[in-house]
Image (cartoon, rainbow, N blue to C red):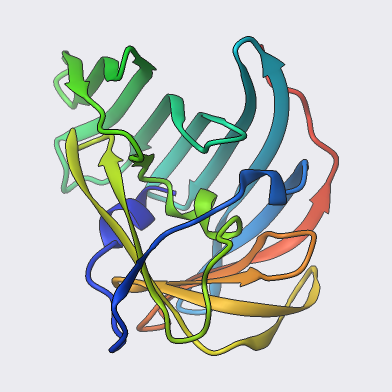
Length: 244
């Protein structure tokens, strides 16, 4: 979900910031479907899927997502990580925009991590039919994560109410190294179409995610702090295997 990457900012809370710890093995192999809402009206959907696979020398988590936010955006995402360490391995992200106010119609990156560097290509397509390809090759410091906040949120292992947590992250679209922050709020319960869940809200910048703290670990709801945009878990199903 692209907007999460751009909404990450400083957190609240008076405690010292803790290093973010997470365990990707806590996320179940599943396919979760969400409904998007804008001003309480349905405006699209998203499907998030988590797979595991073994490919020497890594046991991997493959996170893929497809979403449509009507009528302005369509998005495809596929992220690969080391299941044991959480280290980034590869990222593909393609977004098509349908806004008459923007000259940009498409943005895309296809990246992989080799020998401690992020390498690949970033593309930008404009209304005049041109596609600009930009080569990427930058060092990735140890411990840096991808910028997909929703991917890591359910796997956090050390978040307690009132905690501020942080980890270095690489922003794929801006080709920049920054910091992923979030603040753990008070536990609560939420009702969504998929059921009622006990959750720990995790806030970062102008966005809040509601994540379960007991297995199966997953995000069940998200919302902007002003309440205008939100998404809710509609149902869960079996994984549809992606291409190897």
